[in-house]
Length: 117
Image (cartoon, rainbow, N blue to C red; front, side):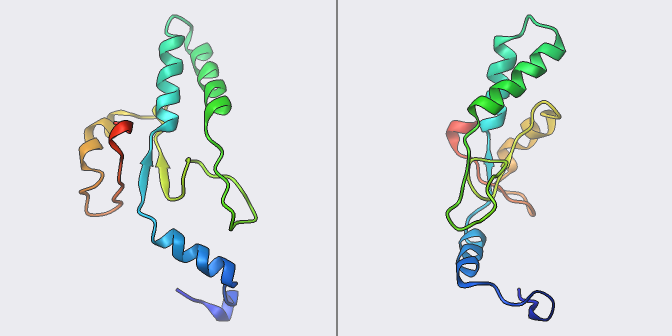
């Protein structure tokens, strides 16, 4: 998709990155959910505000930092490109309900590896 009139052309570096990104299947990144679950289990006896604070601390200390060679601005919410993180502290019921369907949905198809389940 090009819109040279408004944005010009992509540089060769960004054109290559765009193609790589478009050819990468969308996936689920369960890292945040795993870190959240570990923290909630470890601090199960604590008040909710302490559990949440410990969860954030665990995520900030242990979430992998994903930096791509092709980009000038770094950072990502997941450990790989085109991966959607799971935020169990917001809602988890729908994830559990649809877990086996992520790869078979009509739209927004996501792959998920067995060790994340």
